[in-house]
Image (tube, rainbow over all chains, first blue to last red; front, side, top):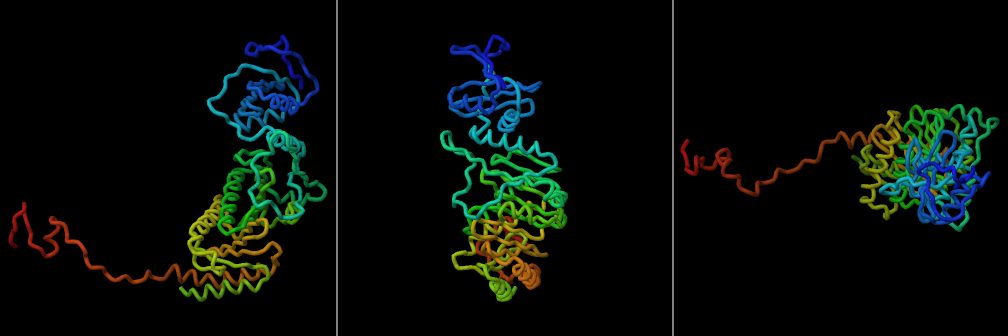
Length: 258
Length: 157
């Protein structure tokens, strides 16, 4: 994705002092990282094909984003998933209040996660297995570590078609929701599964707190006509799947280390 | 209701290794009985019960009734079994024998169900009528045997 700051700017492109140039072959994640590290306050317009989006940077973070389909984290994730295009400063108006609270590392991580998953047609991605149930007693952080520390994406193992075709046939829907309640990815007829999973996980967490049980790992519910598995990922995201009542979720449990 | 019956039913769950204790709620979340260390005092279950009830309600929000749930935490699990008139919750360790616990849960809910029905259908405890502490307001005096008045004057009949 070229980062342009040349004479081809559109009318509302910002003109400011300093070097101008273009970088070819860079990923949008690289450009965002550069912009964040500079710590400047400015708006960058991202164009990809017919799509246009705006990323608002301040104090080393993306604090607001706008695309044709939405604003805030949803827009940022959409823009960060684009593969090709241009990235240039512009003079778009700032909002009254910031719409993004996650840090930029987390946004890039989520966007990469989603891009990976959307490439796996017909597959549902499940979080990697845990070696143990042991977690720190504090609740999982809702955001990735701050700049300077390493961001280690949790390994995400997809269920291969060969090993899990029967199980996948029984999975009706799956959804991943971030700590702010935004749907990061979904498969099948997820409906309000994201909302149900988010609220149910929170209630389960509170019930656990009340009884002195820390660190919610998962919730599994057997209903008359379905089975629901809700899983808290290390990133703070909530992953949920709905399956047929007779579904054998042992493979999923195994992968999650449950 | 027989609190002894509930306590006996819950106590039997401890036969399964890894069970730390259990409690029974009405579907509305009110505590019916518990078999837990004293540190789990009754007041604690006002919130826990209400939240667990809301949890079950949330999962059934699409009309698909919940039969059971497992809440897994770092070191413990909470098994919740819904029966006709209540919720049975068991606190257990992660390495519990799930098959044995399921059987025990089935038997326990079978024993608890009549206890819950008895609780829900029993009449409220009789309350002795209280003597009136304050005199009736003047405008109502006539209906209680006191002299009847009209515009401040006592009238006969």
